[in-house]
Length: 406
Image (cartoon, rainbow, N blue to C red; front, side):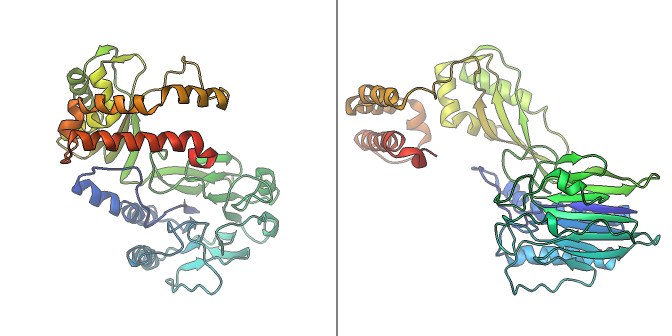
């Protein structure tokens, strides 16, 4: 017996935190979730799996675009033609309110808001029971695990599908404990909701496959699904398969000692060209703490000019830098624990109208502002704009309270 376990497709998902992306790469970003789904169907057909499990958050939001719906339907129909059953559930992102109707192909079973069990018979006559439910609202704070039946004695394997997370009653996403899952004596728990692939228990497997396509900078690494196959001892063994066409990665160049802006840019270009691998990578670059940047290099880094220059010197978008930062020096003391009154007193002494005006005048002398910010403003207008922005920011960070700070 062999099946495919995937979750968190997030079709229609937006890639966030990206600016200045070339048009060719932008097209790939838009198509990435559906491309990953196409690869999932290809894998299921190639591996000749007995069935496919899709555990929640098929879509990124409750209201889906026509393109996302059509993409999912096309994928399900391809599996239908291949005679591969699909069992799916909806999660907190794509929850289905009462009365929602879908006209899925005949091979699809979609769970409703109550825990139910469906039984499948594979080609080799293996009997498999699958229990699960779908969200009918964004939050499911009442644990659902009590509604799952104990393992059915009449089947060869019993699988639980659960879109949720570890927690206790009152938590937002169908909270559960591993002990509660194991008490059902199922042969496999197909989890969804957590986007990082992880195994909560090995025998029987209690597994998050992660999401199908990384969407944010903190969703780094390969993304895909699990192919789960029965073993001679009746256990089930999941194996990961990468499917995402675009991967978020991190990279730290080898830099040391004092570096000026031209040297830093050249070293980044020279080293970055050697990092590209198969597929498209969105790269988050962190400069090591061992590097000492000149004043112009630091200004170019903090203002984003260095990243723009690096992007401009690349000849391909297959490996594209999307962020460039200096690593935090953990040896430096953390000042966040100082009393708020101390910060306030320091701010009143340092952040004065005169100091802000002087800073504005100083910034006007920087070539970066005059050459990169292509706005037709007089020095007096620039000075007034910087003055207003800094005063506004200071007000927000010292008088706005915790909510504004967040």
